[in-house]
Every structure is written in C-alpha cells, then in structure tokens.
Image (cartoon, rainbow, N blue to C red; front, side, top):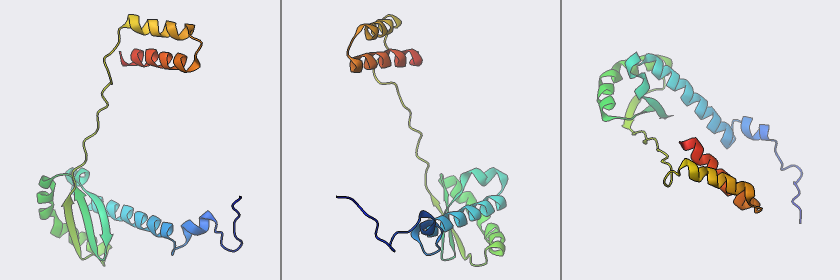
Length: 152
C-alpha cells in the first residue's frame, strides 16, 4: 500500500509557513514580535538590571516579564512606572506590565558513573580489545578504555 498525495490538497512548506492565517506563520510572527519587545524593554532598563528580565508574553495590552528572583521583582516595582511610560510611547496599546518570578533551573552536573579504573587496567582492556574477535565486545572494551583515559 502506498501513500499518494491528493491533487489540490497538498501545500508547499512555504505556503504553510508564510501565510498569515497559518498556525506556524502566527507562531513565527508572535516570536518576532516578542523578540522586538524584549529588545525595547532591555534598552529602557538600567544596565545593571538587564540580565535579570526576559519577556514571557505580550497579549491584550499586557506585557509579562519573567525574573529569576523575588529581589528583582521588588526592584522592578520601582522601575515599573517609568518603564511603562517609556514603552507606551513605542507601544501605544500597552496597558500594564506584570512581573512573575520564574527561577532558572539549576544546571545539571554530569558526574562520572562508576569508579575510575587504574592505568594498568585501562591498558589491559585495550589490549584485550585488540585480541578479541567479537566486534561488539571489541568496540565496548575499546570504548571503556578510551573513556577512562579522557576522564583522568
């Protein structure tokens, strides 16, 4: 059984992405709009505060900013009236700015699994890999011997 395209119903990828009414086109337009707004917001924030805020959403005249800490939320309350006035000159439909705390997840540390093997054992594994005829075993032994070398 083969899958055949129906005539008149297939659409090119450009037609799906570039159309203003398409879902993907709407997503791309919204992403570009949020990127532009984020640039405006960061431009009007003090230099020392720019790293702590990012745009979360902009919908129905409400701008949602995200910050990783409650301290920055408190500081933003002092900046909000001035920032709102500056942004309203550039975005007349802007009515309010809301700020939410969204902590950044901690970076995961990859710890080496298992105990490190000695240099002698590593060399024995590589030597054993040379002597074996089984390709899967050979590849596994070589891999273990080389990984341990890079971790030391």
